[in-house]
Length: 229
Image 1 (cartoon, rainbow, N blue to C red):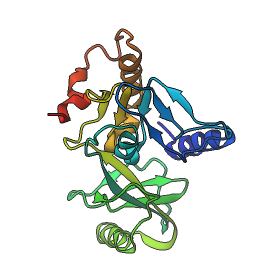
Image 2: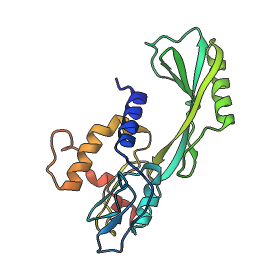
Image 3: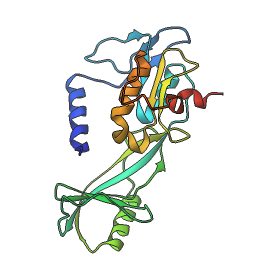
């Protein structure tokens, strides 16, 4: 079991403590080293790199274009969540529960209920926020299915889940932009596939041999070349 909220908070806090910044640009003409100023740390000046790993999530196409590559069509889709206080208190052993029509799901979290309308709304790369209508629809659908009483709406948030045109991840070097390595489009299963995806990505990037975790994976299925003419 993974505590995703705690993992996200610890990762973000660690990056901020190290002085990480995401402001800046990545640029460079084909055949030249990529000038990277997008992820400078501690106020250091921009540097130059022969390789740039584009793991920018919803911003993957933007980063690629700044580096002189054509976009792949990575599309951010908004997913909304709300934290509810309900009566009775949901048991911690309650599994993730998805409606038959797949139009909402919920799970317990520390004595509260996390609820989503299971939305996939096309959006743009930004600091996403939930729409009031999406939250209202999720609560209405849940109340029609269960007899819990909603006592309070405590938190609401949204995130961007990015997908490639065929909804498969993109791992590998750009065939037309030397030095640009794509690691994007993990969509809705990034956490579940993260160990194998990270291992495969590192092996492709560094030219390392496959191991027991990745030897059966057909990397061509995820190569960015599948979207290039």
